[in-house]
Length: 125
Image (cartoon, rainbow, N blue to C red; front, side, top):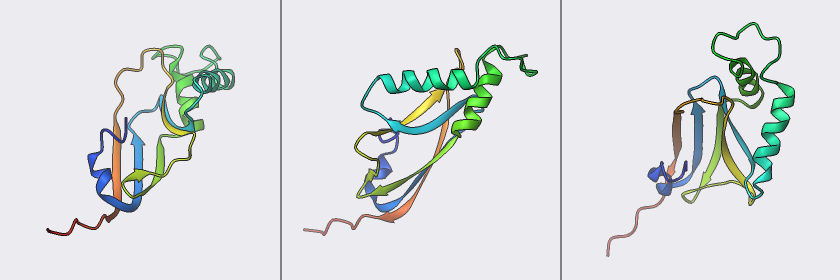
């Protein structure tokens, strides 16, 4: 989905794409993107590390809010991905995950910053 939302990517010969998530109860991760069990197991592991009903002080926004903040702190809200020849340089099995840590998190927004050297323009015929 990142690639589809960033048509400028095709014009970069070599560079970096920085992704920044504007939220505190969701996160970004690069992980295996081939087996559908991976995101389920990841969520299960994170829920054991930061359960929703632990004795948190910050509870005004719901039982899953503070656990979401903890999970976000563990995974982070930004990624930097190399770009080469108009494509993200991800490994064969890698994909970018937007990890939602709330049951009803709502819409999420990303800031994408693309920096790099442009591809050579096509020669005029």
